[in-house]
Image (cartoon, rainbow, N blue to C red; front, side):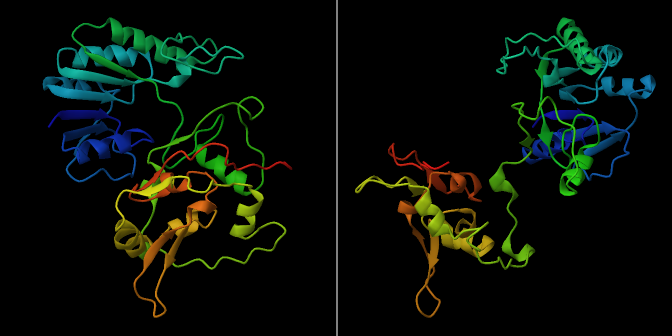
Length: 319
């Protein structure tokens, strides 16, 4: 068990990190101003204070920490304060920098660890670069430098306005400001894997979906047909279950067999006897359109989607 201090601890990235550290059994303390309403996990030691108060902040350096995770340093002066406070007092200092520090050349979208930290356009990035350099030059401060990109928890990253405003404007059909022409290869990373976010069936009422109208929406089997996907006779089944009991004992019992709904091709069916008893999962592997949704969304990660033999589609020749 490590003694971990988080500076921040309630933000888009830091709160999930605090939650994970607690799950791993570490002793976790959080230092912040106590102004956000996000509830910290049970067992977290909350230390209220302000980095702008040097006297109170210096008290953090009066004890030893196995790890200090710093989410709130944005300027060289703040980094100098951290070096004075934690040098010789922590086994590992983790600095949350930013992916915006990387040099981005026109026409070169791939960024690696060898990409230099150069950003002449944004003071925020320039300050983060200066902080990194100070940290790396400090003595008695073992460091780890993290450069996160867009991470989503409860708000959307945006260019010039609050994240929530982006979603509201999208829903209202209003324009939003984006980088470039909107085709920039940016990725939004959610704090959870998709399969971790599924609610249990008892938490929601069943949805009555309208029938396909044949113009805008279509039934599944017709959609499978036009995908021109095919599987050769005798081809090994590429949809495999790690535990054949899970679809009934877990997925059906807790989630009402979500594989029946998230699969766009009707691959997964729950069959029953005439009296409604003996539920069992039938896998119609020949319907699969190779979207891999089941592998991503299965709540227990029990479905193993194996790459099928090549040449089977989907193939949309009229698109």
